[in-house]
Length: 146
Image (cartoon, rainbow, N blue to C red):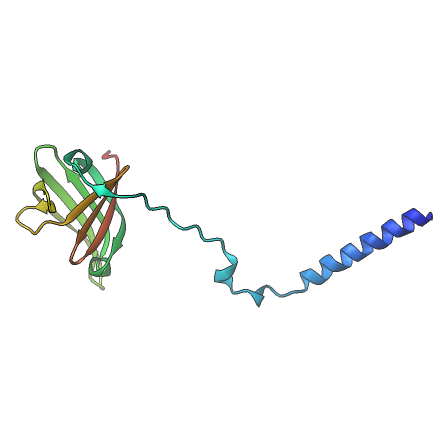
């Protein structure tokens, strides 16, 4: 065996030994949650909503605050005539049921008014609505009603 071949063989053996030693390090050195790549959700900038932002079919993508304790999913269909209908999947701790409501909506300077309820701040971003009320924040995305 030539001198160059022996030298290459020693370097290869050393590399294999290093790789073998690295394989012996237990995976529990780093907690499982720390091993995963977590991508932060990109939340677009929101501005005051217009009626055009509100009209259409929307489904919840995020529910925060007290409302999140029992609400699992929310759907709204806002008509351009000021009418709306909605459904919420509610979890009361024993079972999940859909609750529905129908009424009228209007957009005022303070936000979105459903029926005679206080206005909820209503903001829009491309394809999304965000409703903020004392009981929580509801973020919706525009969806297709099929």
